[in-house]
Image 1 (spheres, rainbow, N blue to C red):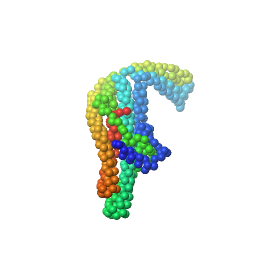
Image 2 (cartoon, rainbow, N blue to C red):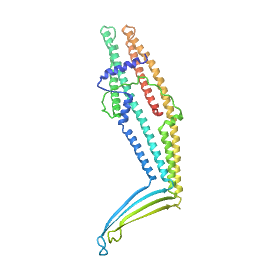
Image 3 (tube, rainbow, N blue to C red):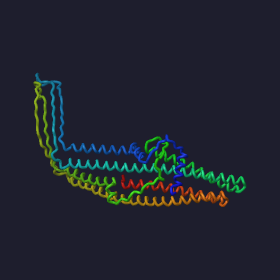
Length: 420
């Protein structure tokens, strides 16, 4: 009995909207997936993951030796001797390997890993946000359908009352004032009907825009806010911190800043490199077109000695980045705790309001039936019936609002807790 009136309203919505099998039918999960597949923010987040992955591979290649080659061909406009050739060439391959550069290669590689993992966490954050946005659009359209159905039912009830009052007026049992009161109430209800039709259209446009569909495409929602939506369990702070992508990104930012300190320090450490190079070229001057092959192996050592305090200042600046990242983590953690507490309070309160509104709706429906019957039997005035109608539509819309708030609160808490 609790959902009897909401179910009735939902049926009115389907009838008014002219639902047919040709219209698209969509569940909440299907709608979410359509949003994931078409949303530019989701695609950009995925591309950022791909970009950071290839940056990580590029940084990893710095551990390996590098082979390169250069060549040149030269020609002279005049020779210095009679048998001097006017052309020559040189081909010079080179193999180089960084042996030690103060730990910069390893620090840069480890930092690139943190960037890659951070981009994955960011993708999860975007996914959670888009899921909540899709849920809100879906439940909002469901609510607007029910609002529209409620006012349509309200107009139908007043029209039915108007027919009764008109008949009793024609028979001389009621005054003209009663008829005018019902006409005024009917006019006001039809005005609200137009406004709610516009709200439904706006919700439909938002629904379709999010999934990149035609703005006016009609749909049949296979799930509704009047369905039973289970309440999620509450999560503790430790579990929540392990699931939240923003906490993970804040931790990775600290790691990245720490590797940044090592990178700054490496620039002022000794570096050792090895190089093997060769050459195949003509003699200079080129007297006989003969060539020769030569080569060399070198080991280089670079030691920074005195840079006027540059190393100390650079490291102090990098360590400040670490402290800033640590402060950001603390702030993010505090925000997480407040957001979870607010989300849980909204969830619990909306559930309580929903239960209360359903009880009130049942009472208002019975009161409306009794008032209408009493008026037909001449035991109540038209004012009593109008008051019962007003009370019914107010409680009806409150019940819809409570259902909508609860559905949105569930989706919001799922986003807050990064629930699957």
